[in-house]
Length: 81
Image 1 (cartoon, rainbow, N blue to C red):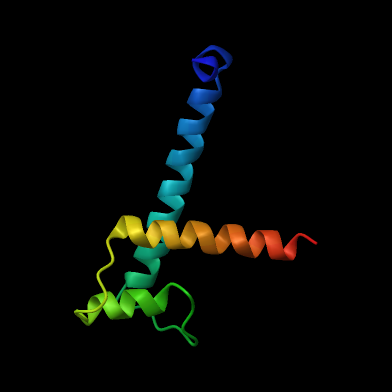
Image 2 (tube, helix red, strand yellow):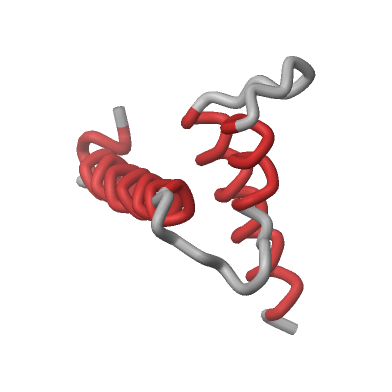
């Protein structure tokens, strides 16, 4: 209830929404069939497995967003030193 009183709850929801939109945009951009990447990156590999319907790989869009979140957080922590 403290979050509601201080306004942090609204800020948290706003940040969540902005990050969710960002992750969706990244996934959509990498899913575009017209996209011709010169190099595959972290996002391309699981999307390729999903696109090729590999039975051993089942990823939802939320799984992909979670992977992006962890990857970006880890990258930012490693590069902040």
